[in-house]
Length: 347
Image (cartoon, rainbow, N blue to C red; front, side):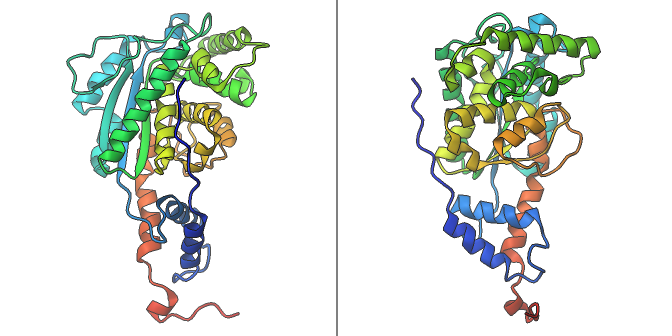
């Protein structure tokens, strides 16, 4: 059985000190809105009144899904391996954004069906694709634990490289289906409200996806499942790895910026395993996928932006990195009223 490190609480005293500094800066109190809150959260996470600038590390986890046999995706399963090759060549959206922000980017094969042995990526394949969750458990308990461990190891590598903010990305044709199943099971929401079009299925494809998720949930009806069993029954290898990534980051005192629908499902699985992980998460955006808002609400997270995104890969999170950097710089470098010789608000 996987043993997780305990997760510390962010430092409330440093959050309070950061808030006090915000109230001294040359602006009306609260006028920078969420940027002020973000600066104070990073102060609490880093244990500093004035947080250090962010050094983000993006880790992209890739895996295939047996449920694609049911016809739930508009793209064939082979696209997963093809896209991993594109990541390795630097041609995907997340590669462009990582270069823009100077972020470390690592690609991890957690369970791609194709042979990727010649690529300059991390080879940590637990098995080549999950099983078909409509008809059987997607993973064994041992496989779910192994995938969690892949994510934990990736988080440690990122932190050893100097990261102080983690970003997980996903690649896996068909992975909106297990993500929807997990969100339904962990929140009690219905497939009607959670299942979306994913890569762009038509109305008939959407109806099929909903039936597949309904059947997967029906398999589990009346069973009392542990969080790990839930992840094994309904998840995927990259989803489990992302959950482990978030858990290890939080245990080591580093926050994670949660991307879209798939990573939010992974965050819910991580929260089910260790509820305190939620204190170390920020949501980048609300995607177009139907149930993303439901997942974010269950995590207690408010997205920073809404741009109509539905790509995955960690792209929405990467787009928000300048916003977070600005929040910290404003907090650290603005003058106080006393420093600038500006009169404060009259009592």
